[in-house]
Length: 240
Image 1: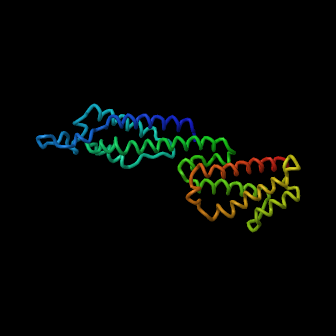
Image 2: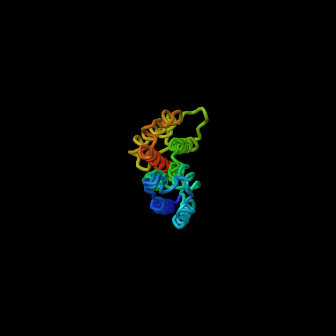
Image 3: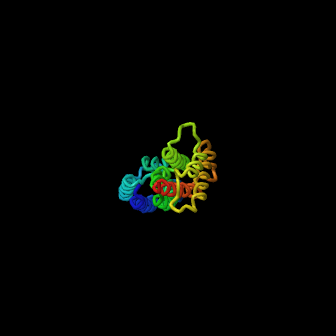
């Protein structure tokens, strides 16, 4: 995905949300009775009639937001519903509840974009899941990356379906079928690749991420491990 484009779009959305908050601001006192027992403003008053200029600007803001929603970001249904009804009490909800909630989501999305930008700098086999990560499906992204890593090793070693990957890596290094350009590192790299694949087979394949690891900040270490594994594997296979 294009991180710069996503940052530009979310910046526009943040600006328009802030503008919407100002346009829809209604003092709650406006709904209270005055000394004659009449409300200052009917909560059900349609704002296209009450505040036509502000209402027109609000619709332009909303159209701009719809045109700039970046991948992995969605607008809450409450905001959409209140914009569609467009009554006085809806404006109060938009300015005091909906927009503040969306602005928090925007800031969280910007943080996620910065982390995904790092992900995009990793090995192509890892960075290709950046859109999945941005959608929040970390479990699927990790399974995809590590399955690709194991598949690459198995294809290189021409393993049959019944052969286990971890011992096959050890045998490949022992037989010289895999080797690192610097011979003295062979043992540590063999152990590293075995450990990464072993962890994947034991922990990721059959289990979902625990809640405390189900966020991008916690998952980055696993993506980085996969990145290093792909780099080492590329060097080992290129050597031969």
